Length: 355
Image 1 (tube, helix red, strand yellow):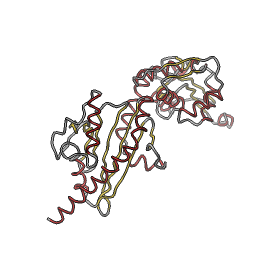
Image 2 (cartoon, helix red, strand yellow):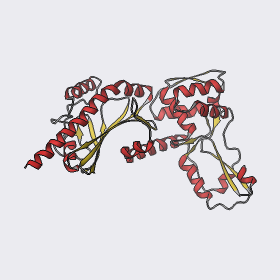
Image 3 (cartoon, helix red, strand yellow):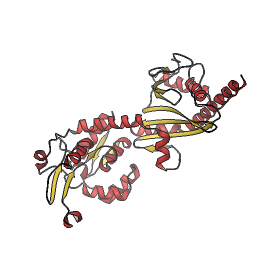
Image 4 (cartoon, one colour):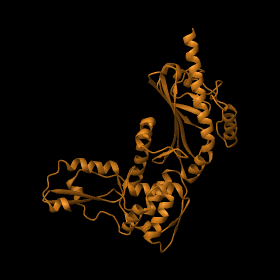
């Protein structure tokens, strides 16, 4: 409004829920569905919306650069589907394979809703309250002029959520966690770090060995060699996995020294291996979510730096409870494993220097 009143031509897009990481409405919906098996739903959950995928929104923004207009032009944009916030929650739950019960109540004030959101979601209560106050108004497209002005055919909600989750997986796979966590500026706390829906526990160590020597030790992990610390704990975890129908520790590994993508390492599978730099293992045990274990090696002046990262994508409240319940044990095991790898690599380096 201020830009328009100053005489600057303004093209304005008005959208409903944006489906994609970082969208306040989408993150609120995600947090509620992931954390609450049973939800007491106020009136705003039945308010109609017309969600739009982040990719489609970006298309509108890109095409607007070549749009000729004068003055103040407003376009209402939305996806192919109109649905309530409750329907949006159900579709998200379906794609995450979660069962959720919603119990509607006739009265729940915006203030109470915002306090509730502050307890069960990562949103700030003040921000949540402003959002909830706005949700009493339907956000559906009434002016279809954007259809003729832009050659865009927005996708529906099912495809939008599916694409958002796939994009998160792709970005997740490409992330260098040592860089992501150091740039976040957040201090280490119990339970590690939260990045999006994922939980991350990371440790580093300086190792007096070359990157090649260190990565060779990392690549020998599992199988007959073991996990460099608490092997009986790993075997116990494997036995418990067998009891619930998982693969356990019985598979071992193809080769005691080398790894390639697709190889099995006990209950893990090699998802990525970059020689002398990066190894990522994906868990195939029975878990309420998905888990990965990563090792990254980089050179420093007197040897190497080893970064060890445990990552977990919890599904529902059970996944979150599982992560925090086993976190103290993870601290013990992963800290010991990092120390064991460091000692083995330094011993190998001394042996090679002696020869």
